[in-house]
Image 1 (cartoon, rainbow, N blue to C red):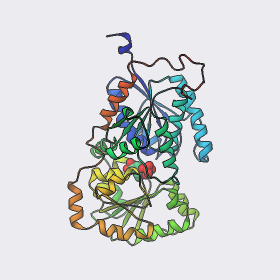
Image 2 (cartoon, rainbow, N blue to C red):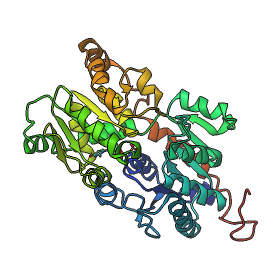
Image 3 (tube, rainbow, N blue to C red):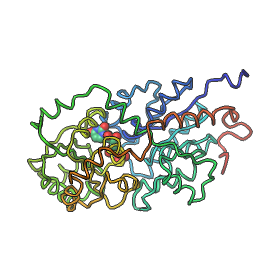
Image 4 (cartoon, rainbow, N blue to C red):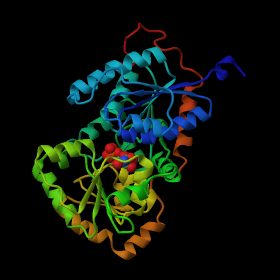
Length: 386
Ligand code: UDP
């Protein structure tokens, strides 16, 4: 074996928010299990411990660099700029063989930009999703990352097709599935405190709905938030509502009263949250990741949005889009007993739980043979591909 082949591959994984940590953790473990060094670079986009630090610990990530600079609460332009600058310094020092980014957050966009400007290969996990709604900041992040990535790990054939239609080099597009499937299955196996949560809000043994909201279009307009709370109150079962810190703040700022049928709790750890989602009669949320997780759990979900970048969940029958006032009607359709029985048997469109292995294969293929040290053949700081 040549010294080159024996060298330990080094990978940087950029993570800024709860869903990125949840979905990249299985890839990190797969890579480290196969001898790579993976350093997690936190951007600090989610700075509340229940959304970031606690999740990092729960998913067993150990080689973790703290955020280079505080970015929480900054406006989008300043936040992305600060993250690019911080990540560039960390990446220059680490000189990894590949940089992993996941999804569509400002952190993922900043990670892809910092890596690309330094000439480092960018691997995009969950590539090719499109809502075709440029009013969503996440859609613009997806487009930016799609333009910069060297390897696109598309979860489904539909997401791969979005990239090919946009002119992406087919040799760089791979249908891998989404690691959310194995993240969900792994979380379900771990001990959890779901029963204690239900007891604490007097819902033990009762049918209940699990609801979360955090997207600005639902939380930042007091009228929309009030309409959503009213709609949740009209559902056929009480609602367990793990409140995102942003939502808690907006409810208080708008002076809204939470209906008695809503049982508000703090955000929950992933294992507990998924155990509750698996038991819930129905899930109501504007979350992106949850639209995938319900397909693994076989549960129905009303998506409180006007568009989705995950149409596979809708066409497979798990999800239905609704505006806040339409939530009760969408819920009634999903709760049809025959529909529910069919969902419980239907496979997830996001893969069979092998995405992390496939992604690790691709990353390790990229890492060997090494493309040359960072900045080789060009002046330090000069963009490699500009
Ligand atoms: N989640 C969690 N605890 C909660 C609520 C959600 O662990 O109390 C998980 C959920 O299972 C999913 C992820 O957080 O994996 C979704 O994150 P979020 O809704 O913040 O972002 P999005 O999916 O919209 O990007």
